[in-house]
Image (cartoon, rainbow, N blue to C red; front, side, top):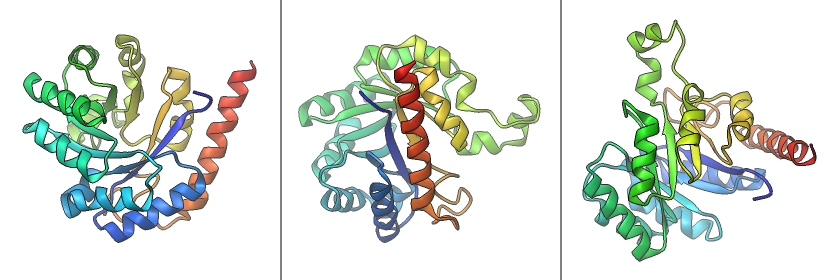
Length: 238
């Protein structure tokens, strides 16, 4: 892979707004489009269908956060046009195996999310053993805002960077890192061995309302991607 793959998380609540964001993201150079969990909750598989119809050449990640009924959920999203689906590491192993089987049957990739796992490196290894294609190392929205959690981290919110190296070292499959990262932190991710980068709240979506941000989204995305490509080129020539 010549450069990091950039994915935008469309954590919105309407297809119209998601398509508007997606057009801006694609013009800016984003590679993958994610139907975020709020969008799937609000619009269901119709959101995935709409994204696939509008952007047939772009991979579409359906952030289902599947906990049960794994085969059916993955099958539905594959038929709607998703190329990747997300299952939770804390689901029963039978559910992960079912999603992996659906992925094989329908030619889509499976991403395993470690949100809430007490031992995330172990969870990553277990998911790899069960056949998932990617690990999503995830510090959740509520976790980052909980006063007790923040106090336990010395007055700061926990970050995906805290355990990222141990996650990457635990598996042989690609890892993503998500959960409140700043632009500067996202640009650092390739240094940890992360080549699939996710841009989400609060960079691309109002993290409190799950609506369009007040800033120039397309301009911000273009700036981030230029910096990412530049950093990748600099490392390649070192």
